[in-house]
Image (cartoon, rainbow, N blue to C red; front, side, top):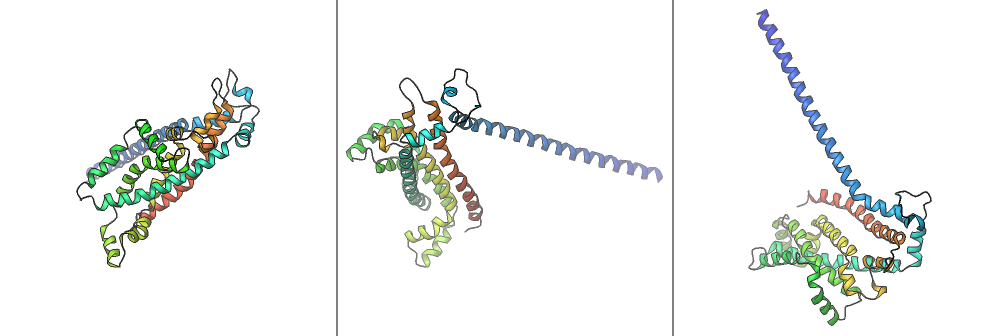
Length: 303
């Protein structure tokens, strides 16, 4: 009996040691994986942010350091002269205002059209031709913009929409609506049809149903689609470069070309303008991102 007890005790000790070793092994493996993940995330973050940091560091350099044959990352005499020159001595404020008007105008129009189109594709998906229409919109998004420049230019010219806010807003909307429609359709598909049926029994028509029920329930998806439309419009170059020849109607993406001459490039002011272009959209995205996260959390308990 004494021998059996000793054997049992020894087995229990060995089992305990083995369990501890396994737990330590799993914990070590998890620690290694977490460390590798953080290293990769930090590396990709540095890789993504370095161009912006380089642009800022170049923008605060004096002109002689910018044009030096031996460039340095940091400067010993930082200056805001390039930023002052861009803001007060160029048409940058005009370009900025044009970008704000065109971007937010196209966002509102794209969301308005996208919500209605997405709701139609979601609720009438079994109707003949609706799926083909949705796929057609998706395939149209794959067509390169440059292939449509000539017909679009002819249309804009015939409608007297060249060098106008309306022309840019419409052209931006054309390319933003298909992807926005599919983004919103996926969210509308998750909303139970019983909610709409209850609202219809209470006397709501389709328009009131969309405005008072579907849109509030879809705020997270609408914000996501709005972010996409805003970034697309803010950074669009080809359409503006094609449809606008009046310098007072240029947006930021094409206005920065004024800092690039035929034989020389004003790198200091160009980098300052680039930083000023990035900062507003980054600030907007930061605030909207917080709202988007809270909206997704609230939206998960709706319906």
